[in-house]
Image (cartoon, rainbow over the protein chains, first blue to last red):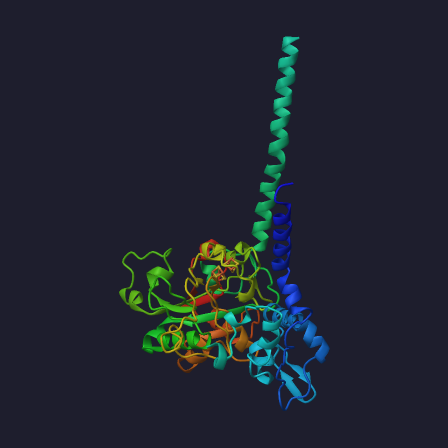
Length: 125
Length: 282
Ligand code: SF4
Ligand code: SF4
């Protein structure tokens, strides 16, 4: 074999470069998202764990309820009523998209396009 | 042998023709029947003057709108006010040129709205009047049939509305609508000027979303207001002049039913059979 040494060294350097991101971060997933919770509201429409993992399903359900079934009945949680709406529901308590939604979405690199149409006057316009 | 084969071919040919033709002929007959019985649901309206619709008791809610054209003529500027209010609460962008125009409610000339009426030696005054045009919320809406994603659909109350989330911007619905009631967003309604201000939406309603580029939009009969027991915005504005009536046409006691029963009204392009729910009191 000609230039065997060179090829092997080249391969090792190549493998090293390719796996660089893996061993450089060695298991570090970055800073954990730090979401800002609403100050005076303690209860959400569902429990925290559900909201953490399934809020997008809930939003889809609301969308179909409201738009397609024409059922716009408000939700009652404790002594508060909520519109089943991202803009006029969720964002009433979670007043900052940047400090709430974006925290996890940026971390997980999830880019929902809700804000192309819905908005928070302060931040998205 | 030759003759036999000839006969055989003849018989085969004849039976093939019979086999193909019989079911389609039967179908044709059946279709005629179905069509005749399905064009009901419209019987109580004075529109019967235009085409013979067999009477059948309608069921369920069917929202309708009546526009009193004379009242709009008497109240100068009222039509413009209705349009402005509708477009304001729904964040309808004003791109400032007719090519990109988005319209939910708009003002049109008589001959453009009613091209199938004879305009020969017609009352001149009529041609000067401001006619409000809007999606007709047809009872048999071709836009709904054309939409591949079911973004456009017929709600239980008879309104034809859109789920903007599902619109893929294919514009089949625009091709299907014979009334030009739909608009396509060629540009982003959210474009901003140098100062970071929205260019095309001057007076933003923060309770209602905007649309995005590549989405079709149209009047939704103010579904969001109906949910709060409010009339559509245009109807509310026109209420002072009693220029518009809105309600369930299938309820004989509703205001709109009474108006339709007592006044002469016309619909746009009734011959197309889309059964518009918007009526013009001439
Ligand atoms: S007027 Fe056009 S958009 Fe409106 S329901 Fe009829 S066909 Fe559809
Ligand atoms: S443009 Fe949107 S609403 Fe129209 S037919 Fe296509 S998907 Fe349906």
